[in-house]
Image 1 (tube, rainbow, N blue to C red):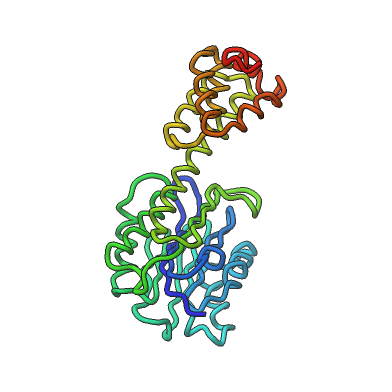
Image 2 (image 1 turned 90 degrees about the vertical axis):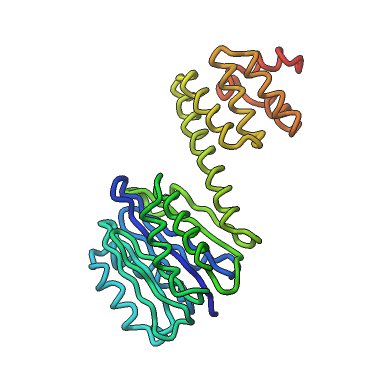
Length: 297
């Protein structure tokens, strides 16, 4: 299976987050290429892809192996190493890459401080360098800088075959093996990078909503309402976020604004009106007030 792909693996030196971003003209590229584990490392495995490089490299890093030794050991045991392309970064930001000599041109990699970019079957041989420059120049959190690197690849031609799928995986500095902060995939799309950016914006909105849920549970209704407002600003088309933001506003004392938000959500999806009837006072203390204000009782 030959997959022309460009990817980046990186560690954030401030937060310790680890991540992978990838694009390819191949269906569901993220299901094969992207691997990361909190406190351990991140791996991108591509070209004539051997997915086992991902978990195998992470297991070696978790056991204490040096990142370069881990990758060298895996390629030395692989009879098709000449066709593989792999990038690895560990939890201390040490990065290495392998581009087999039989990877389809243009193929190459660029290793930087805490990251490595790798690409094969590209329109130009400058793709890894363009990715590295975009990543280093970008601002924001690790997810934002990883996606900037993908845009950098496109700025010099990207995959010679065009676009199809993309993925973004970011894990925290510490946590259980399954924990991810961002895990987004665009499996088949005419503009996968634009769609990935849209999904990242939606992810950020739901991240704020999750924080707001925690504040609501702690009785900090005003602070929760502020976060819900920010979430709805990031995702203005989300009736779900509008609904929960409305309940938070109502519980925080602004019954008029909260009821209006719930009403707007129900206008888009009448199921919210049904749900409001089912929510217990524990889950929605302001629910009865909102129903009365809207004349739904």
